[in-house]
Length: 220
Picture (cartoon, rainbow, N blue to C red):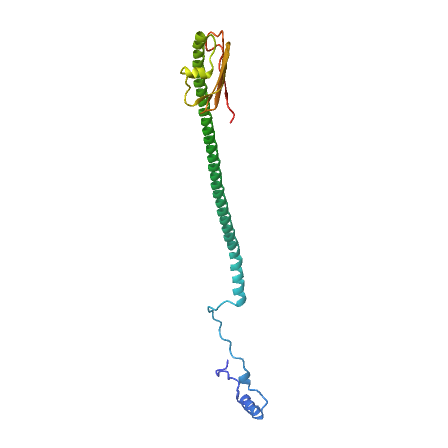
């Protein structure tokens, strides 16, 4: 084992050769062409590459698309529900209005029927009352004729009855009358109702009801 340490190879000759070649202009400097030592790699927070960013954006978009579609669907359902609710409310309102119209028409019809029926009933009652009054007048005529027949052996004309005090109510008038030795006839009209009643008397009548009065309504 040698006690002297190993010598490093001398670079003097190489340096001289490089200087000579540089003076000529064609040889490169071996130290200049030497590759620098690579710097050690260190971890640093660098922004992601554009491709990674685009991929992340695509993934975010693809993840957000179903949510947006769901939101649009929910909005459409809400709008459709609102429209259906509005249509239901309008339908109910129109149905209520139709019911009110129908009810009003029914009530009006019933009122008209009641009014017409009431008028008819009142008219019928007036006619019935008028017939009763005129019939009573004719019974009074029968009594006067019976008295005149006992005194004169014949029946009297209407004028002869008037001379002897026979009077009719203000709204009644004699339409026709005649008299013979065996019978008499008088027709009396009620001007308020148009009722006309006719009565005939015979020689052998026992009372005013043997020949009932016949009444009718005069056509105007």
